[in-house]
Image: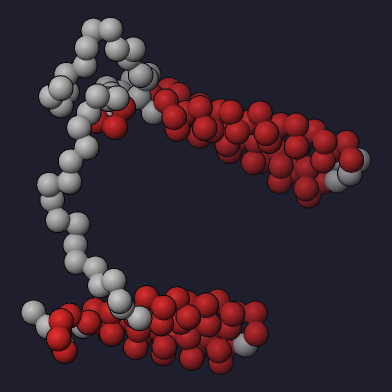
Length: 146
């Protein structure tokens, strides 16, 4: 079938249906956890307040998506008969690149430096600059040069 054509027998999905139910059904988990934690800890103020705020925020997002979903048209991803095509180029990625590993180690050193010492953060930033330059210029040299 062509894109945008749904048979009359097809059930109309509500837009934002999956997102809406993900957040609203999440309350089925958070409300009992809140009640069990409150009863178990004799309503300890910090944890009870945190779980109460989680319920409020989770529910607020779910209600927002529910209200927005009733006002908007169906999105392309809501059409069960839509065709999935990849006509465009998503970019060029090097499958044998070591630079993402270098960037990951640099990020780990930066965050570890907050706990261990600021001197380690400096090493992580320096390694990150080297890794970023290597990642950006990877296709500008050697056998992969364009």
